[in-house]
Figure (spheres, rainbow, N blue to C red):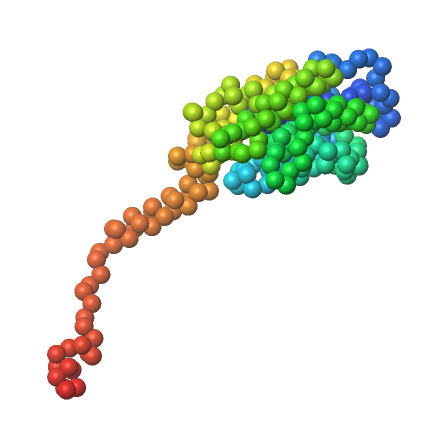
Length: 308
């Protein structure tokens, strides 16, 4: 499941070693080799069952949704809406344990709180943007060490009875991101570990590159995600691709788009503020001009002469 927002449904995964109605905690590890295809088939079955699922989403600031969303919703929030809204799974729990600035080793070192204590059925991970960083104050992480940490993450998630979902970090405006020139190597590491370990992969880096952004680096226009009008279509298409299930849009079929809601790519709340400001200016312009001000007594010639 991936998100078209660009990532509204980025977490396509399921419960790793359980069938519908079987407790996650009581499920032994599967003896069969893990495969992404089998995990996706299991997810499709779980999504039709009544048993609630626990979804844990973790990573760095991109997942945390702190600051960089410019006030818009983060992809975990879109995923939450998809699961508990469009899919109608109101008893599912979606937990975001991502922390801005963290690397993969930070998650491994805080495993109990970030992952295990939530008894997850699905664990998604998007990481690498901070791991790739070099420069003053940063410990350099090599791609090989990063891949080894990814394999440890996958093994730990599977040991909980859940299925891991790996996500590649989105593309970076490298000329304006000094110290992150190695991002392509870390993206390849995520892809290679996913292929070798049979893990569901949401290749956001490839998706962002495929979608393009009119030649403008992602985020450089103040919009960290693709235009709002593209999100639902892409989200539903990726959901069908991963699960075979196409959620219906929650939008009323007779609802007209909000006039000017996305003019110039501005968030809706800013557009509304600008519209209010324009209305105030028009009202002021329609008012008759104020009468000319009368000179005060202190400045009339008579007063001036008398004061002399």
